[in-house]
Length: 540
Ligand code: GLN
Image: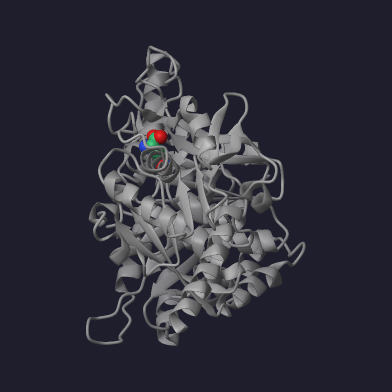
């Protein structure tokens, strides 16, 4: 029987509940238990796939093609397990399932209600991941804050799960402990209210995680223990750390992993916690400095490219470098200022994007990187843009474009999957999730991955148009990764350039702090080399 840990939040949202949940997952895994994670989001979109990154940050893609909340990225990076569509459940998905069942007559004439029909649907999602994953622990985070109207059915569902399996459930509540502006005085009142709110739903939290800007003082612990009826060891501080991967260590230092295990009458099976501590130590000792430009269209929000930023930084740590990633709005990059904007960086990334806004600046960016031998990694849209730039400037196809930006283009270098045929189906859906890819021997990609066959995650509608493949090859472009079943071009590279690679998939979703993705490691290595060469030139 799986053990269930439910993570809720109080006072305000955005205090790193996902990181706390992932950190608990890491600790349990490092104590020898298998862990699977899940996030419930109370909004009514069926999934975040249709939301702008400005609404909800990055859309994280799971191996089975789920378009999910960015917290799943934290979970995968912390627990190093591949999650699934069932790890990300919104109210929209729950309600659409319930309504579908109602229309199909599955409720046999009953009045369909939030309790029990919606709550049963939610519980089914929790029990089914326990069954499918077979994991020892299922950690489920409830998005938003306790008290929100939208999240009430989820809170009620987890209360019911507790009453059905009281020995196998634990509630972990994360709260903000604010200070009065201008003073250091920590205030527990909002946390007390949040406790009361949870109690009013029939849930008594077993652990309180306190987020604060100042160190939590003993009197604050005492108050929380007293008002929230908790033993001292059940109240844990989550202080702000330089490196998010230190959070599991912060929890461990306060005995949280052992407290959780004792709650379930379990003991450490195998202790691997030292490995994570060692990894954090080595990350913190990184000395070199690197700066990478991320040129995209959703740069006004830090979370839009979260997994890309994490992947670059983690790859940097593994080569002893602290990477600073700077967001550059692609709309600001023009032919006349590209050098001025981009010459300060050691390497360049163009990440995924949808729609034509900002693509002219991306093309200028690729041109700058290609002509000036600046290491370049193009991800999804970043690969498509690289192909268009090469077509225009190297192959001389001046009007080369993508059907996405110019449906009338005579030279659709980037086209629909069936773009080679006369009748283009514009209603084609996205290519999502895992696809196999075969690497060509003696290419940079093959060398970086060190293997012939890879599996990567996708999220896009358009593809490279194979009609132009030969022309590209005649002009020094190598197609080093191909999805053989449909002959889709997945990786392009320019062997003459120090590091110029475009991937139709999203490598960032498979990158892990303890195992950074080879395309990012390749980029940071090449960028470090570029930095050394440029400073050698300057000092001459
Ligand atoms: N908009 C492009 C497509 O649909 C690229 C998508 C992406 O970068 N994720 O193919």
